[in-house]
Image (tube, rainbow over all chains, first blue to last red):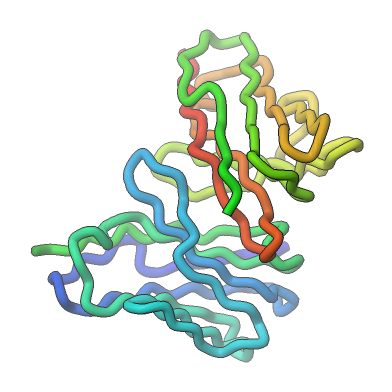
Length: 112
Length: 113
């Protein structure tokens, strides 16, 4: 079955700097790649997603890139702010959003 | 996106007992899912709750331990049976939206003593 590896497990950046989180997946049939942000004690919230027919997608300070050949995708956050501090999860789905396999998570800390 | 609620939000239970968690959505959805998130860990899919038929379980999860009901397109329940301390986790339901994205409920924090 699908396996998703996420790195790094923890990331600390200065406010205003950029943060990059990377994920690799094993099943070339995966076609949907969402990113979720989970604040302490809260539910995971979808922040951006990308499908396999697109190489890059951007939403304000957040962007995701996908390299299907290498089977990896990345989350880029620019101009980081303290409210970006959270745990971020990547996921991969073979049947679109139906059967998601999640990465291990990255705890992002923004230092003021 | 759909508004998803779960009950209870948290519970403390004794080992050997069972707990039923409810998930309610404010609109009809085709797909509903149940996940487990162990303390400090990632999310693991338990099963897909199918309306009108038996749930589809992922490897490592069985119906006897996690029976699921899906009586209609807006409601599902997950029961955690014969609980042990290892079942202490957050249990989350999620739904697939019409836009082929997945949204999560607020979760149920379960502690088993």
